[in-house]
Length: 350
Ligand code: ASP
Image (cartoon, rainbow, N blue to C red; front, side, top):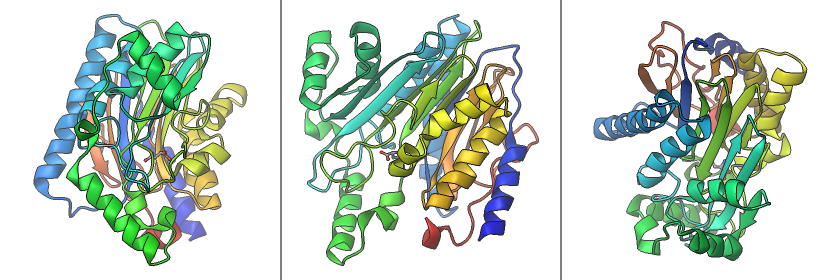
C-alpha cells in the first residue's frame, strides 16, 4: 500500500500543469471520489459541459480585468445552480433528511475571508459567504444568524424543494440502510460520492482568491460542519498560494490542509505541486482520509492532486483554453499526465 501511495505522489508531482504568468488562470473542482469509467456517457457529457460553463463564467470576469474573487464567485455560482453537484441545488442530505450547506471565500491579496455554515435555504451560499467578507466585521456566520443576514442583504433564498434532487435523496436512503446494518456512514460508499465545488483564480493584477461550497457529506449528523467553510482547512488564499479542497472534511480540518499547503509554499519555498501532493497524497491518506484539492500559485502554476479514483476538475491557463477532466488517468491536453489513478484498493483503504 505504501509503495502505491508513493507512486501516486510522484505521479501527482509530475502533474503541475504549468500555466504561464502571462495571463489570468482559473482552476475549478466539483468533487473527488469513486468515479469509475462506467459512468453513463450522458452524465459524463453533462458534467463536462457544466464544468466548462463554470470555467467560462469565471474566466470572463478575469478577462474583463475583474479581481480573482469575482471569478471565484462567478464559477461557483454556476456550479451551485447545477443540480449535478453537491452544493446549492443538489446538495446532499443530513441523517435527518434536512439540508445544511457550507461555503467560504478568501481574498489572498487582502487576506479577508467570509464563510457560512449550516444554512438551509440560501440559494447561493457562496454569495452569502462573500457578503460576510465584505459587509460584516466577522469571518463566519452560521445557521439562523447567517440566514437572517442573507435576508437583510437581499440574497436569494429558496424552499426545500428547490434544493432537493431524487438522486441525493436515494443516496441518503442507501446510507440509512447501511447505518441500520451497522456500517458507520463515513466509511460507506454512499458517503464517498463527493461533489463539493471549489475554485481558485489568479487575476491580471497577480492576486489570488479561493472559494468552496458544499452540502457537506451524505448522511452527516445535523449540525456537523466540514472543512469547506473553515478558513485554512478547506479554503485558503494568500499572496502566493490559493487552495480549495474536497474530500472527507474531518481529515482536512485535522491537517488544516489548505493552509498546510500554502505555508509550505510561502514559508518553506516548496513548489506548489510538491506542497499540495505532500498534504493530499501523503498526510491525509496516512491518517485514513481521502479526497483532492486544487492549488494555484502567484506564477500561475496549477496543482490538482487527489488520492481517489477521480475528481471533477477544470482549468483555463495562460492559453485561454478550457480543459476539463474527470478520471485519474486523463490527459490534461498539454501533454502532461494528470494525477495518478487511485490505488485499486482505495475502497478498502479510504
Ligand atoms: N469536504 C466536504 C465536507 O467534508 C465534502 C466534500 O468535499 O465532498 O463537508
